Length: 524
Image (tube, rainbow, N blue to C red):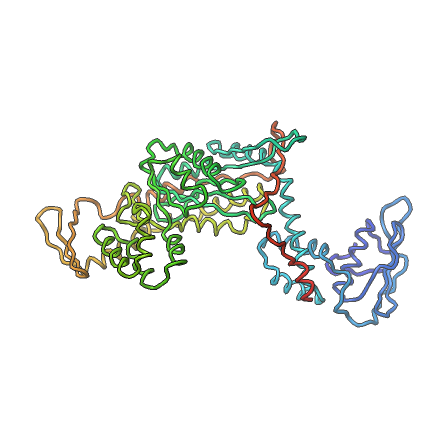
């Protein structure tokens, strides 16, 4: 048997099948850069010749009563020149050749992959061929999107088997008339160790967000993330739903509320970007909780109609104000500078965007939804995957993240976490510019140098809440995720496999389909 990396032939050589013989000669043509082509391609006779003008030929015949092919005629000396136009290369061959590397780098850009293939093969490869090869490879690796919906019950059963306290909900709906099976609608996952870690040390501050999936069905991924003692992102739950609307958000929040055992809704704070249906869902499901909205998104909406550096500076100053005095001062300055911008901003409830009106129960003055953006960035490379593959990839990412965070913090010699200490350092630098007057007890009258305003500080309370301690951080991340077995080891369930959802048609005028493949071909 010859080396398939650089096949060499000799008279009488045997190949186990015609498929392997064809693949070996094709590989030889590509490696040697020769214009070899098939002249005869039958079940029992396969003849290759060189179309470059030389006498190279390789003639294989099927042996009697066997499937193997034996070389009967072979002239192995090339007298032609290497060719740049290689007809033996096609998208299917490129897919088979590079599939393992694409599996390790699923987000390989088309241009970068094109450069790699051309550099390896030393022949002309069109961008359209590369585009098709990447698509075929991803289909082979990730599996067809429609086929994976039949595995959701087995995947849910494996999660419950490895992490019994997890919550996995699968919602289906009646298919169209004439079809007896049910169609997939929604899939919710809240892993047991994650909710246990949240309840064991995270503050009751939850960020909610939704992002579009890049698959052919155009579904939505809803996510809920918490804030760990170091102000970092801590994943809680995620769900694939058909659309972002009132019903899907209410379903998601209701399940999350049950998982986190929210008996006292007023002690929780939710921060979001005002997604479709989310505001109404929060009002209906957790009306007593505090609702904050990301100031960055408010700023972008304000900037569309009211531009200017002064408007931007005063908006952020008003949002960062921790007292009503400073908030009103900045809003008054905004009213003088841009009355319409002031009216737009004043119409928003203060409790949703300025620190001066935030509740103190969650021990956080965060007005960004950055933790959700961090989670979306971490899973961005999985958004074009099929449902089970995507869910497995998210679970692995969370498992590795928890392990890494736990290991890092165990190596640090500190009482408090890093980010809260940096905030404390900035506060100490500000305090160095203030003048205190002691009352003989635990209180001080502090006169600030900038602005001259005076505030009362009570040092009877701790300068930093214990929720920022390393001890709490380790408690959160001690709840590690369990790895899941491969699909071949999943147990069979008695559930009837569900059908994939039908592609959704967006309202309004349909967009023109991109002719990316045709454009790439024309560029050649």
